[in-house]
Length: 408
Image (tube, rainbow, N blue to C red; front, side, top):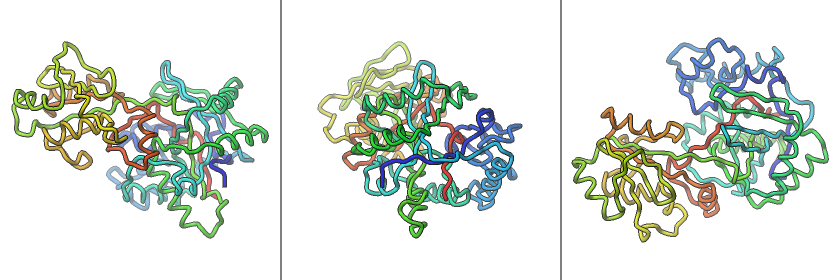
């Protein structure tokens, strides 16, 4: 069984991609999805967030939601909006966000290699979210949300993908959020074999985003074990980028109160682990071990003392350093995953978003983070460890509906 393989993708006919593609299902709530899909009958949100076609307030986990998604997928195929390729292909997918460009491969990846940890994880999953993805896959008999994977960049592999982009894409569009999406189809058997061999020689792939989707695919494969190890369910839909092209933004923190302290007492309590300096403008950390803090209308730069940085790949992450040296001992937040006093703000919203939440009185203090590096993520995965919650925010986001994997 190979690490990855080509597949006959289900995708929009070439002139309808702009009508179909949608943001990932998990970056929108039901109300946002309903609004975005209004007057767009072919939006993939009718499949990925099918509760929008049911009465407002419908539970997204209601069995009728999955039935509606399957009916909508069938409707789009019958109408000729989606069509399945006639033979197994690879697809080159390029994302463009401003000056940033990343080029990766759409393929299906081996569930067996995921189970053996050659496709490496760095997050825990929640059973309820896994259950949701299992029900979605089974209802559609397809995987429609790709898992975002990374490989350690190799010039030879990067070059194979880059060469394809010098030809005419079958999709070239800019989505509503300003992100460019380009897609090329690789149907040449010789090139397919070269790509398969190049990836099969890799030691590992790394899950960047999509832990629940990959875990759900593993469960579906286990449920279909009688169909053979080479069945389509033994692989899951993925987009694989070289690690050095992937863009991780900061994932910032805001806290509702100061654990009963005044701002002055709170500031004084930071000096055991950090040097603290007021700054005149919004503070974005310049490197690891540095944090911005917004408190009572003033920005500060916090720099952790070097002897507080351990060698462990998880404990040395900036999100861990903040949690272990400030959030827990000073603010009493020992479980960021469940504590309602803390919230997380993706860096795409900018530092102004942090200021607004503090200035409004909703939150008392905000922390801007230096973005987690891909090298750190891979080190954690290689060690078989798990990253703290809300450690990474990847941009740009993959589109749902560009290519789907039908299970035979």
